[in-house]
Image 1 (cartoon, rainbow, N blue to C red):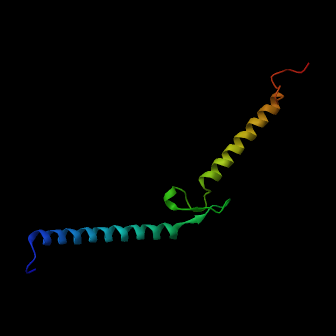
Image 2 (image 1 turned 180 degrees about the vertical axis):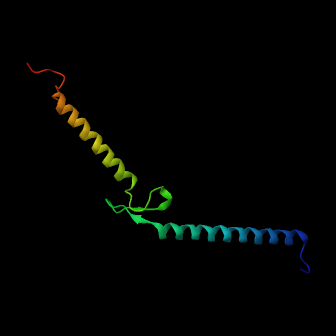
Length: 96
């Protein structure tokens, strides 16, 4: 440290501390990524990769597939109701 100013020593110490913190954060991020990759599974319908962090459990469908199934079921129920009422565009007209 001979010939180095206190300011230079302080700057180098801060830089080393910042580099150590960045390395720690990078290692944590890499470990999190490895855990996610190890726990992923494909959606049974579309094969999209799902991760445990999405709130799903292994074997569940992805959100878009679940939405599609829900919407299809609602439309089927609506169609059945329309057919029971005599549905169609002019379903409000009663046949005489």
